[in-house]
Image 1 (cartoon, rainbow, N blue to C red):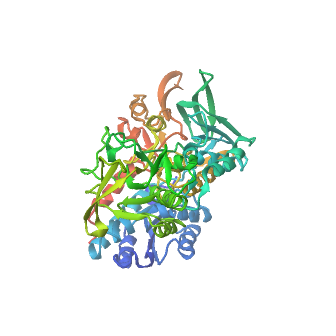
Image 2: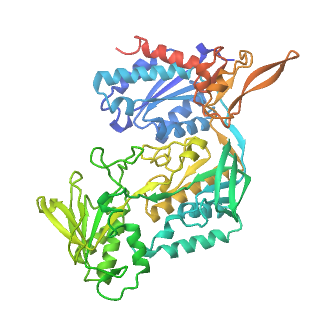
Length: 599
């Protein structure tokens, strides 16, 4: 076996089109890298991720000049796969490579000599690690070609249909008696007024009649175990007031648990105190069922002459201004769909009931999507009156003694230089925002991350927008963030593609950066098992050694997260993480604190 001293490290430094070289003296860094221990070759290129850049690595590996690779460029999240593929094309093991991020961690935050010195140190550290890298093999896991969708709203339905169309069995789980989620509570969708019932029926008919889709309503998930390709769910189902449990084995899981509408607290803009204060969802159902034929909207037999609509109720909340929930939660995000939905409702009313005046009180009108700005233009043409309030001067709704108008809304209108106005109203409509459905129990059970806004959190909003850190579990729809129906469908399609691609071969190849036990050193203390954050990934098993049965730690690679918690607590140093061994850390630190590379 080749000794550590015999390793030949190639260092490849990227100019990044000036992103790095405008702030780092790349050629000086190359000169310094050539003098580092075990570095056989140091090269530069304008774009290492380009074909010519990759060819530098391939040629050096094929010629035998190097047997370990360090690339110093942008963040590894962007091009790590690119460089591993290049190394594979050279006929080498893709795991003999390490990365030094000298763009985000250097050139974007430093300049001149400090940047050049820091880049040198990071490369020295990466080279010190690289010389200790050993070839690794991917972890291959047999996978059941089956996906479970949790949630039967439009996101879950669309995901299930897309996956089934690719020939993979799907089980759809819904906790309510009916499918459809929030679409059941909507009518004409903004901005093009498609009927929600038509969209739902089209998808639902296909799902219900698809031979590869099994549907369970009135069910809850009691427990989730296993790992990618081999999850096991324990599910309870209520039918005819009888509760039964069953087990479901599946290869992948998609969380499509959806969202709920924000419920205003008692007294928020008069909600719960005055029957004339309703939510936008209430208004949508009223319009859906309304049979009024005159020029004035009638609600419960009352003619609505003046309607006030208040935006951003339960959204874009600010600490110190808005009242938090009992748990201290504030919804600081924009719910994104409310403005368009409110404008859509205003236009419907003004077009059908022109004698009903509408006053929209808003902080900002956010019509961000295709066709939505036209809603605002149409509302202006329909003579909807817009009044703008600041976050620290919320409209005030109060009851008045007036036979014509039961309510009055006071607003300081910033469009008229903060003039205070009292608007009489027959009806006040609150544009309530979107909140994620409470899945804290499921998230805790499945070890899924939740953001500060209580929505489920993806790995990366741009690079991995429908994936969780836990391989084999995906997310789609408004459990992730506020979305309109079109965006939900897109997210569902993305999740379906990811899940299908994962399972299509019947097996899955995972990165080998997992814990590995040195059986000779392991004394079976069990500290590693106690520290493991993934239940079942690490256990103590009986092993026969020289006729004696002893306890040794055993890793299930497919379940291991590679977090290193076990390695940190082992008193014998008998467990390491492939690709991140303790000796590698030690040599990296030695390189960082050395005075020999930066001047």
